[in-house]
Structure formats: structure tokens, C-alpha cells
Length: 323
Image 1 (spheres, one colour):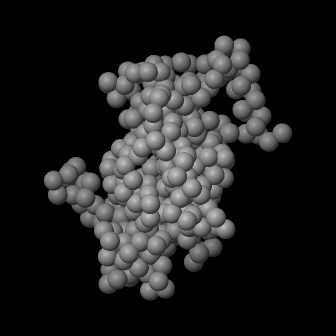
Image 2 (cartoon, one colour; image 1 turned 90 degrees about the horizontal axis):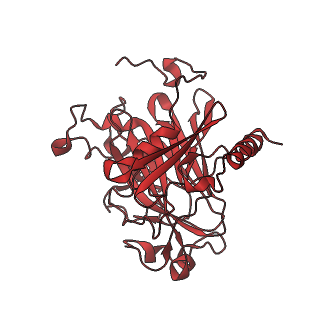
């Protein structure tokens, strides 16, 4: 039995003893790696690194997912879009340094950007979007990309930190399942011979009867790759399950800040979380009117100590930061 499956079995046994019929009824960090929310803890494009990411839909259902990139200084958003996953779909993308592209500087001050070789629908369109649409540019080889922006921490949104685009070069990624997709919308986004037939139909979508309650089943991975140094550091995305089990869905139009981690609801006005600590179940309830949803998510990551291996080597882009 694989270790993660064994861990799941142990937790399931503890949950049964505790009288918990459905772990998905509360926010929990799923040890099997499947969830409604995926947290990719780190991306970087510094020191010749790129960050590769993937998300897999393990269910026979279409999914509408919010993809959000947040910079590392103050977790301000630098890019978001809506992603539509076909049943059993895999979506991949690369976060890279735009230095030297379209007359940008090559001194490490240029912003990060994302490109995808994948045909899965995005809103706004990235791979097949028209160059000149807001944020869409093109590499010399003809591939489209979406550049990260500083509007959430510069100008009127100044948070006291640096306003430079270089701040977008490291951070983390959130994927939040907004809805399962059925009906004509599913027909538009479902791959036929590897290509969905109706991506244009979901550009600017505002929701409707085809968008149902999210059901989870997503997992993902990230890899920080430096082809010049010959290094690769891989990780699994942390999977949060039980985030939203209320009626309706979390769908929001592309370009809006919602949904984010404040929008969960699994107990009708209260967000409940389950945390196992040395074999003991800790159940907590968080009032949504007091921002409880994000507190519930934070609770499943709570730890007295963190043990890990790490490297501090400027050649690989890993350096110590004071403060």
C-alpha cells in the first residue's frame, strides 16, 4: 500500500471512531492529495529558474477553476483567470522570466509571466488569445503568454512595499474549484480528439444553470526547473477539501477577485475545519461573517514546528531573506 493511501486509511479509521461520517463536510488537508482547493506553495523565475505546474481532474465531470498567482512579499494578486477542465483532464503551464522579451531588461527586473501549451479553455484566452488583448503578448517563436502585473500593490493599491514588477517573480499559486460544469457548457469545454470545440463560448461567462456545486477531485504538482544548472525541485500541491459544500456554486466571472479563500461555506454560515494532532481530532468552527473561511483554511496548515530540507545557494536562486 502506498504511504499516502495508508495515511488516508489511518485517518479514515480515526474519523470513524470519532463518529465523522464525511471528512469532506469540513475543511481538511487531504492526505491523498485530492481537493477543491490546491495551494502551490512556491513559484520562482529568479536565477534562471522556471516553474512548471500541472492540475489533474480525476472526476468524470467538467470543472470551472479560478487560477490565481500571488506575489511573495505581501500575497497580492499578480494574475488570475478562469480555467475549464474537461472530465479527466490534465492542464499544464510554465511560469517564466520575461527578461529580454519585447525589449524588456535582462537584469532581473522584468516581471514573470505564464504560458500554456494546453488546449483546455481559459477565460481570457491565453494560448489562442489575440495578441494585444489586455495582458496577452507573444514570444519570438509565436507562443502566447500572459504577463504578471503590479496593479494590486502599486499606485492607489500601494501596500508600503516595493512597487516594481520584479516583485512578481516569486510567490505562490491558488486554484479554487468554482463549479462542476454540465449541459451545453460542458459540451463546449469537453475535449474532442484533444481539443475542446467551444472555448469562445465561455469567454466572458457569468454563470447560469450549467454551473453546479463543486465536488473536488483535483490534484496538482509543481516543479522548479533550472535547465542551465541541471536542477529540478518538485512538490505536490497541498489539497484542501471540504471548502465549499453549500448550495449553489462559487462561480465568478473572469477578472473578478472572487472567489478567494474567504468564500468557503460548509455548514451554512459557519466554516468547520478538522485537524488531526498526534492522533487526536480537533474540530473548530469559524463564523463566516468574521472571515472564518480563510481562518478555517489557515487552521489546517497550523504547526508548532516545520521540519524540512532546504538549500541556500545563490546559483539556484535560493537565498536567505531577513525580516
